[in-house]
Length: 377
Image (tube, rainbow, N blue to C red):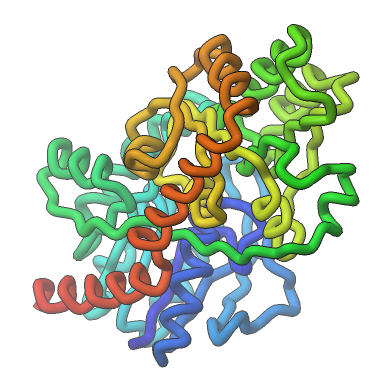
């Protein structure tokens, strides 16, 4: 099959769950012998890159602003795809999927698919107008394509209740590349199993500020063991004000480490040697960072939103969302319960391995294409 992906920033993924999702399934599909094309933004993927692990990269420009970056690139990618002989055109996320009607009208033979990753209008970086558009985009993403894939049962149920559609449940995945090296640890003066890890974009709904405040309160009441650190991996994306706020509230705290975006061996090492993974988010789709932490055998401590609970099943510790005091108390308890943390980490690793394999997810996506094609014809 000849398959095109539209809507992601690009691959290989530097940050972003959608980008990681596309990287993993696109490279798996290419490995299986399919011709795969991924549209990439010049402000994300190196301009000289034309192939990545067998996947063809198509570079197009975008208007690189908070509100126009995604939609301008998606528009150009959509126009370009009209003149290609793709069998499948697969849009990622509700915003980009709002332009799928162009394919529906002008390229009827192609199998048109959308993946519903999350309800982006809940993300606090957007203003009211952008949120209105994203809600309208959700309607188009669920109603226009020949088939819809949802990454969680929660989103499947929501799409059925709201729009009366039967979407295909295909979750995000997890890949753990354990690395025993310690170069990354030395860079930030970290010790094995002596730091709490957070990985994600620094945007408000991810809740990093709750974690920082909880850690600060623990330090102030001597509930953090000597030299135990909090490591924040990630950076902002059109959220400079929030990133500045996080660093301001962490000012003078030598045990709170900001690493910026990390990929490859550096990220692998940070996952491999952490003591505990914390996800304090207010809203999610199905977090790849959380699934990967589980794959590394890290016990997760997550806010009790339904999206996190679907990901972890019974293999996690939880705290009440937005409740800094509850998060602080759970952290203080777990830092002194190494055996419990290790046992939960082993359970999380088993769940990630059994339920969230990228290889099987890519195969399920190909099967979904065939199913949608049959229904279309």
